[in-house]
Length: 382
Image (tube, rainbow, N blue to C red; front, side):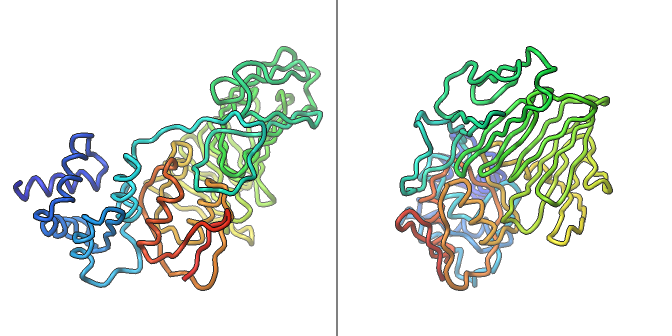
C-alpha cells in the first residue's frame, strides 16, 4: 500500500472519521509488521508526539516499541476528539468493538441498588425519586406509565425519563420532589414547566411539583445539564451548594458542582446566564468558582465537551490522575484507593462511557499508572 494511503488512514483515525471499512483496513495494517515502521513515522509526523501505547494485542507491540524509542513526554497527546492515550484509542477499540460506537445503557430491573463487589461494569440509566411525603420510588425497576400521583400532579416515567403532568396547580405550591442518581447512574427529567434536566452520576435535583409565583427555583448537587424552557415572566434559577446561583431566562448550560471537585464550573452553550448575580456569560464561556468563592471566566472553543457525559463520552483535556479517578469512581461506582505518590501525568482525548473499567485499567497500566481491582476497590499505587 502506498504511503499516501497510510497517511490518509492515520489522519482519519486521529480525526475519528474512519467508517467501518476504514477501521478494518486500519487495524489490519497495524497488525502487519511490514507497515509498522511507516505508520510509526506518520503518527509522529501528524501528532508531533512519540507517545503511543498499543497494548492488549502482542502483535502490535513492535509498533509501540518503534514509536516509543524516544523518551516518553510527561503529558499524553491532546488531540481534539481522539486519543485519551493510544492504549484506549486503539487497544480498547480492538477489544470493545469500538470506543466510539456508543450504546445507551438502560436501567436494570433489580429491586434495589446492588452492594456487591464491583467488577468494572459501566454505569447506566437509573435514579431514586423522593416524593413530597418522603416516600421513594426506584425508577430502575418501574415500567412506563404513572409512577406516583401527588398534589394533583401525575409523575410519569416515559422511556427513561420522568415527566410531570399537572392536573391542578393550587394544591402543589409547597410540594417538592427530589430525584437522585447514585454512583453508577444517570437520568433525565422534564420539569413541570417543560425544562429538561440531565443528571450525571452521584447528583441530585430538588424542585417543586408545580412552579408557582413569579420565579422558578431548583437546587442541585453534583452535575446537571439544563435546557431551560423560556418564560420571561418567571425567571429560572439554579442554586448549587453554598457557592452560588445561576439565573436564566431560556438557555442551555451545564453545572459541575461536585463536593469533591476543587472548583464549581458553569458552562454556557446557548442563551445567557448570570452567575452569582454578578457575571453574565456568553455562549462558549465557562465560569469557575473556587474554594474562596472567587469567580473567573474563560472562553472555550470546545464548550460542548462539558456535556460529553450526557452523550455517553468521557472527554479529557489536560486531565490529571486525581480528576480522572474522581470520574471513574462516580461512573463505575467503585471506591478508589490511591496509595503513595502517583505519576505526574495528564491525559487528553475521548473514550466511551460504555467501556469496561477493566479495559481502562489495562490502558492506565500501559501508561505506567499501576492499578488493579481488589476486593471491590480500585487500588492505585506507584
